[in-house]
Image 1 (cartoon, one colour):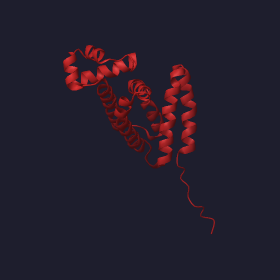
Image 2 (cartoon, rainbow, N blue to C red):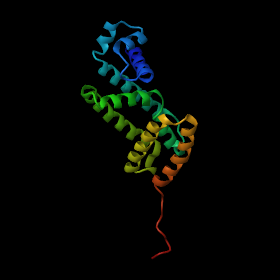
Image 3 (spheres, rainbow, N blue to C red):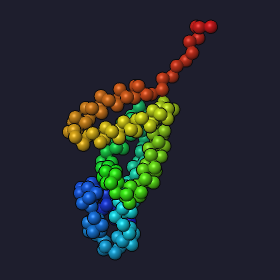
Image 4 (cartoon, rainbow, N blue to C red):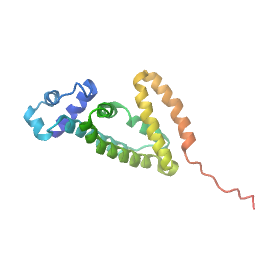
Length: 183
């Protein structure tokens, strides 16, 4: 029941946006009564924040359990900022900017998301990226994802194919060995 409500909330956020998502619409999509929905989630804010948190947990599990070629770590991270999770989260961010109740409910979720991204990135990049490079990389792929809203999928693929390798070559730790010929 709870999972159906969470899935319905994500679908509604992605299709309708935060402003047009209502608890009645979510209950309808989930095929449950309004009373059942209220029993599990007393407010719209609690339901949509829980839905995004649910997706974050699922996506992190997918990233951490996938067999990933370490050379593709940056692509995997960039892919995490796409699809229903990203669009549902984006709806929350924009709405939380002017809604104090939603903002307060979203802050702990965003803290959890940041920690999950840092942990997942550490798994993806190992010791090839230092902590500042990981933070900058997360901000880069988040920005690419937001600006992708205004590009065609083909143009976005081309931009990512050009920028991500360039970024990786700039931030990846280069292993250097002391020059043994100098004394």
